[in-house]
Amino acid sequence: MNKKTNRRKFIQQVGMATLGTIALSQIKPVSAFANSLDGEVLFTLDALPYEFKALEPHIDALTMEIHHDRHHRAYVDNLNKLCAKEGIQEKSIEVILSKVGSYSAGVKNNAGGHYNHSLFWKMMKANGGGLPTGAANDAINASFGTFDQFKTKFIEASKSRFGSGWAWLVAKDGKLNIGSTANQENPLMDISELKGTPVLCLDVWEHAYYLKYQNKRADYIDAWFNTINWDTVNAQLKLAK
Ligand code: MN
Image (cartoon, rainbow, N blue to C red; front, side):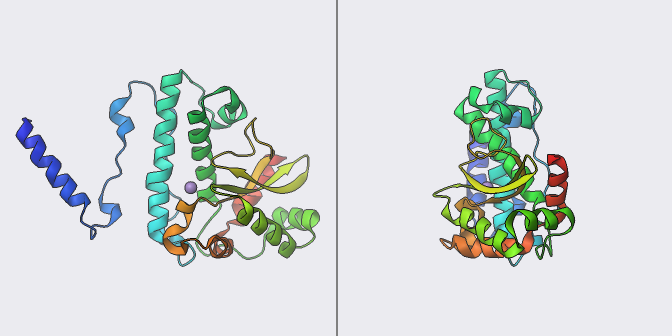
């Protein structure tokens, strides 16, 4: 292709991208990674286990699409690039997290971002929410008294995390604890103050809610409770044992 053709194509593409009427789903997410790296692809982005619109009205489809296809994809692509650059061949994300303090800040941010989002998507489902089921119900009542008392504490942890981060329910030594982490840190990281097996997690970065809720993080947290997939919580509890 000559220079002129390239230029024309570029203008066409830019023109397309600036058309606000094109649905995001019609624009293929750009993965710079695939073309720019000779190294092995260690980590991949799984499709969401439901449609983008599945969590409406609590979480809107456009937020889900941007959050998964752009934010999560960027963590995966960057993690793969950094692993190639830093000679990391470890294929288990959990192992990387467990010794993340010995890697670069970039690996910490992107490995955390990949793990946290992979888990977060599974923590939600269409027509979710309600009271916990099975072992989750028993464990929450045993640790916090009632579901409402658990919910109050979890909301407090979610609201009080300053800036970007995550709220967590973790299991450790047969007990449940609630806490939060900054940025993309998580309770599996060696550098984390909060430790344990993640049982439930909530993304409180603004990108998770700003399109629909703007600065009203509390409203997003309230609505998110209607999306919880207690089956995943129970699966994580099993994992913790
Ligand atoms: Mn996020």
